[in-house]
Figure 1 (cartoon, helix red, strand yellow):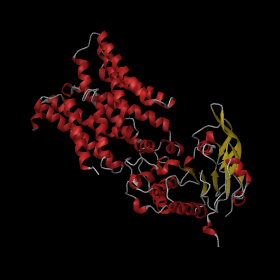
Figure 2 (cartoon, one colour; figure 1 turned 90 degrees about the vertical axis):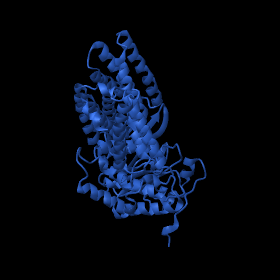
Figure 3 (spheres, chains in turn green, yellow; figure 1 turned 180 degrees about the horizontal axis):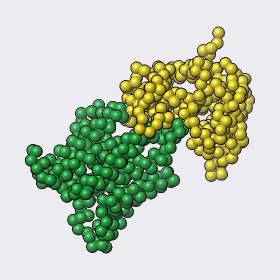
Figure 4 (cartoon, one colour; figure 1 turned 120 degrees about the vertical axis):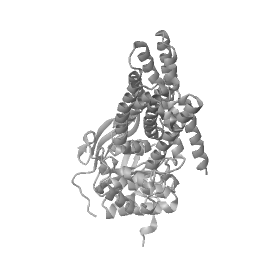
Amino acid sequence: MFEIFEYDFMQRAFLAGVIIAILASVSGTFIVLRRYSMMSETLAHSALVGVAVGLVAGYNPLWMAVVAAVLSAWLIEYLRSSFALYSDAVLAILLSGTLAVAVIIVSLGGAFNNSLFSYLFGSILSVSDEDIVTIAIFGSISLVLLLAYSRELYFVAYDEEVAKTSGMKVKFLNYLLVTVVAIIIALSIRVVGSLLIGALMVIPTVSALQFRVGFLKTISISLVLALLSVASGMVLSFHFSLPSGATIVLCVLFLFMICLVANRR
Amino acid sequence: MSINHQVPIFEVKELSFSVRGQKILSSISFEIFNSEYVAIIGPNGGGKTTLIRILLGLDKPTTGTVKLFGKKIQEFKKWHKIGYVPQRASLVDSSFPATVLDIVNMGRTSQRKIFSSMTKEDRDAVDDAMKKMDICDLKDKMVGTLSGGQRQRVMIARALASRPEILILDEPNTGVDAHSQKNFYELLSRLNKEENITIVFITHDIGVIADDIGRLFTINQKAIICNDPKKAMSCEDMSKLYGIDAHLIHNHKHEH
């Protein structure tokens, strides 16, 4: 089974996959507890606008995806906090709206081809050295920020108002969380794809929640499940010539069902 | 018990609050001093919770001023001196991944420095708070599995972990059985008398107020402050405020 590491592209794919699994599961814990699960889908679609601009204008699509996702995250957070009602409607509007914009940009630019397709469903095997460097740099910054503020973010997720009354800068923390998540999503779409990244962020945490354990254990279980799914998904996709992103998501779904059954009351 | 009349913890002057032209609170003025024990009562929709939200900085008054520990609320920074136990304390999302210790630790979060883990001082404050609330044996239990009374003690322990000088409790007895309620009021009394913590709690249930509260605020858009609650129990103003024939039921545990 280890012959897959004989290929350079598989080594890169594994490295990228492991980094993304760590980033997606750790940030996913905060996203799920904060009840922002749908936001990961919306941000993934927004990131595609950046990819489209990058492909058409000839910039690095990954960098442009980060910019587009972060801007969209700020817009969502602004709308959410200013107009408390219908925040899920805001997500739904941006979810389809940004995808439409991305498709139009790409088709106007005459680049509606495999490139965009690979960002929709992920193309872990075509990850370049440059991609790895980008993912590693932005990923570490995001992870350090998340861990630095993890206790504050946990408190805010549990009870935003009490966190506010204890003197925490809740607005800053909310913007910090959505910014970091936007960056992580933009980095991940190269690996699992824009349509599938939501699963890798949300499902490991929801699976871990089935164990009904404390915060640290939940985040650890979520991390282990994400790593397991990425590793097994990549091995399976290599051996059976399946699309990597979708195989990873099926693996995480399978683990979710095991957790569900094992912890049923 | 000596009451410090130097600098009030809360100093509220001519406070009014309106939402979309509708008056919720109208020119309310009062002071609350160190180690007082104050109950705020009033009908639902009378503005009790709004008043508390303003005191906690969650809402801004339309007119009037609020000072905390002698400082204007806009400039007040030492929020850890104020412990807040919200209304839904007993209605926690039961699937949230939090042990009792996780929750009580939150009480130290706002005072910690970034990148630093819990200091000895933090751990002592958390231990202390759990001992006072008698929940040490529940430390590793998931909050979602606790009874209403136990959860309430956990929420108070979280507030106590920041070593506050005042505790504010909003409808603390929602979802708590009668036996726990009795213990709960004894506990508040003890915190007030032994630990010298100022207590302010609100309730719409005028039947459960204990004998030993110091002052009673009745809020229904305006405030009526009774400095001697025992007299207030027959106070005609109360009936007027409620618009019903209201009377308070004594808690007889202290009678001889």
